[in-house]
Each structure stands twice: as C-alpha cells, then as structure tokens.
Image 1 (cartoon, rainbow, N blue to C red):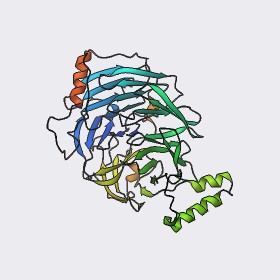
Image 2 (cartoon, rainbow, N blue to C red):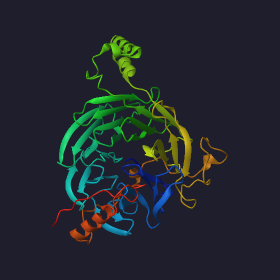
Image 3 (cartoon, rainbow, N blue to C red):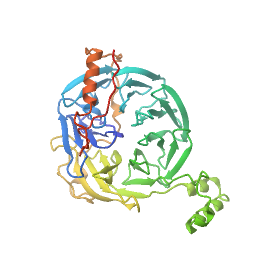
Image 4 (cartoon, one colour):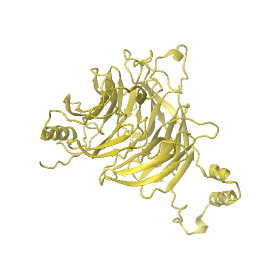
Length: 449
C-alpha cells in the first residue's frame, strides 16, 4: 500500500490518492470529500462510496472491508475510524501533533507523527505501543507489511543517512536496523508476504531490496545515472518477482527480481548444464574485480526490465503491480487527477503499453481536468498545460500551528467499538467462490471482555 500526500498552498487544488493493501480499490480525496473506487476491471472504476462532507486529506481502506481510517485538513491531529457502508464513525483519537501517515493491516493500525509512531490493535483500537523520539520524519515516511503473520513496521532510523529501522508490531520490539543508503530515505515498501523490503534514497538513483529476516541485501537496481530524482513510490508484484518505481520523471521503471540462489552458492553443481550466457556473465563479473570500486558497483546493478512512459510528468504519483481479471497490470495514480493502466509483459519485459486512463475527479471538483478522458498515448494538447492539477508539494508541510492535543477516545464503550469493527471485518455468511473481493471482508478474532 502506497499513498500520495495531499498539500497545497491555497488549500484548493490538492488530491490524495491511496491504494488499499491488495490494490483492489483506490481512495481519492480532495477538499470536497472522498471517493472509494473499485479496480476489479480495467474499464471505468466503479464508485463504491463517496462523501462530500469533509476536507479529507488521508483516507485508508482496510483491504476490501468497510473500515476506513481518515484524517481531515481541518482536524489534522484527529484520526477517525469509520464504517462506510453503515455510515457510522466507530471511534476517533487525537494526538499531540499532526498525523502524517496512517498504515493498517488485519492486525495493526499505525499512526505516524513527525517524531513518534503509535501502534494500535485494530480489533479494539487500543494503543499497544508508542515509539517516541524517532528521528525527524516530516514527510511521514513509513511502511507496514500487509501480511499479519510478518507484521513488521519500517521507518527511518536517521534523518541524515538511509537507515531503515524494522520493528516487530506483534512482539513489540525492534527487529533490526538496515544501513540501506548513504542519503536519507525517500521510499520504502514491503513485499506482499513481508519477507522483503525495497528502499530508495533522496538521491533516487539506486533501489535496493533486503531480506527482512537477516537484513542481507539481495538486489540492487540502478534507476538512473546522470541525474538525481525524487522517488515517489515503490510496489511489488503479487508474487514479488517484479518491483516498480515511480518518480518525478516521465518514466516508471519495473525491475525483475532474479532468483539469487545461484549467487549464494545454492544452485546446481552440474556445470554441463550451464549456458554460454552463464559463462559470459561469470567472465564479466570476474573481470569486474580489476575495475575501480565505483565501476564495479555500477556494473553489478540491475537495469530496468520494463518501462512505462507517463503522458504527463512532474506530478506526484504512486504505482501498483496487480492482477486484474487474472492479467498483470501496472497502475499509476497521479496528482494530475488520472489513473493510468499499462499492459506489462511479465516474460519479455520491454515497453509497457498504455491501454486505459481514467479521470479520478469529478468535473466539479478542484483539480479535475476539463476532459472526461484523454486518449491513451496522448502527450497533451492545446490547453493541457493550463489544467488545474494537484500540487506536487507534500501534505505535511501545511499542517502546522495547531494547539497540541491528547490521546482520547469517543463516547463509545469498548464493547461497542469492538462490535462495530467486527461488523466491518466480518466475512459474509455465504461461503464459496467470490467473483470480486468487494464482498470479502478480512477475518477477525475477538477476545471476550
């Protein structure tokens, strides 16, 4: 799950976009409210629900359940947990500072402030642990594994270099620190099963993938050489064989995570079965030992397996690699107000073809482009340069100067909150194969009082 922060100088034209944990839906919010869109088809996204009551700046949906976690611009220190199908607010909590990010899975809900993180038990929203005095994190950068069995939280361990702190949210202890980059972190993402974590720094030229179990670096990819860029989002494919990265450039890179067993000495010992290309690769690696360290590092870095080109660039964006109707697609949601859908050849790679693009905002909403749909492959036309689009600045920057608050609940009793959350998470009574995931809610186990 990635998110696109919403912030704007005039508080008019911002847009916040967030995929849910399995990329089956997309949350879109502006100063006029929010919409939840289904992504079960590449055709026009189906609107699951909408609200035009508040200036929502963060909205996170828990998988395909009815549970939403929301923060508004007017109350940036207050988190609301809502059941959107019932139209009820389950509970709300206030914090001592601005909420910069919210992450959730079936076991935990994490609230990220600039110098602290709160870990809640999602079943009753009790605060289990608080990580205080973290290095300054003004962008609210953090990642939570979507797998409840490998329920790890990652956040910056330093504000000056790229250290990744891994925290076990089940046993509530620090698991490890990974020295990922020389520059401060810009993006992090766990693989779907929580076994891998991908990282990028503010320099934006190299993306690395580490084993969460022991912190060993497994992959290193070079996004570019000549210029530094801002990495906005990272996303694994469902089987963690591909990794996509978006930035402020016009190109979305997709990297292939090759099997590293041979590199670790666990491959086949039958030399007769090795290909000519295998011998050539070994020769290149061997010759690289005679090169200076910098050249060796560049030579050993993987290049993009596949690339997609955005019709517009310079906008903040997030990406997803997901199967829609059993076909792998690359999705890019951008602050220009559009969702771009690309075809990707998982076997051969190469250029990704833009097959669909959908406007995320209604015509009357700030940031909405005047055209209902631009043609795939279009690079813009007359008047496109004047489209009102979401700002590329970060949402965190404008939420300053409010009176400090304290952690508090609502007037709901504990049992009432648990019943409401259980209602949101409960599976349908009818078991069996579901054509879509919109009716399939994640399971929940409640303990008696």
